[in-house]
Image (cartoon, rainbow, N blue to C red; front, side, top):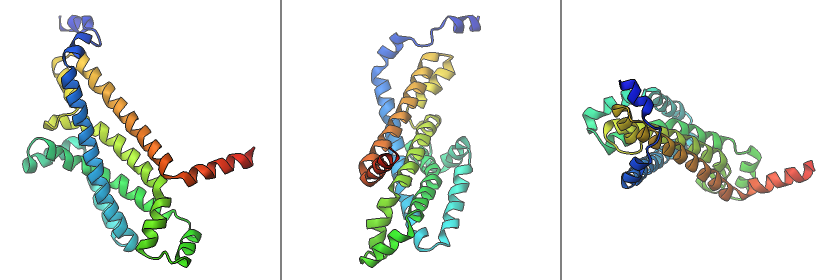
Length: 230
């Protein structure tokens, strides 16, 4: 009987979507907020660790070691560990989500800074850009493509992890997926999954645009390379 009912249930019931428009919008923005806050905090922490690592190289293995351990913990297990300390809700979700961004962002920031050509650094030193001034004015701008690539990966990954955060009552689109699975009702599952995918694609395209805007020299280099090739 249950199988027959499931077979008769349409994949999407548009009347349900229409009746739950306000909740869909609310859950969507909860998902966006959870993602942006986690990546934002993770980026600040990773940038601080990266700058310390660039100055004192011995700190880098320690930072990546701790970040790697956090990244390796399964998400459900990490949520379970955090619940006794923070309870259910936003804080538990954010602590876990931030933890998963650190390794990706830290590695990309350090790799981007290390990828600045030595000749460029020597020229900057010769012009008086030394120490932190060179780092801010020369190294970080040239490292932007690699840093933005890390942000893209971390953000898209976080969008997916936020769907699991619904299990700790943090909200987001995962609430629909959890509800649909609990009731054998496919419509909220489809709504939550499709909107999560669209959100991940939107964030990815956003960072592509950010990189394009912030690295005009890279565009000029590509144009010159195409001109030589033609």
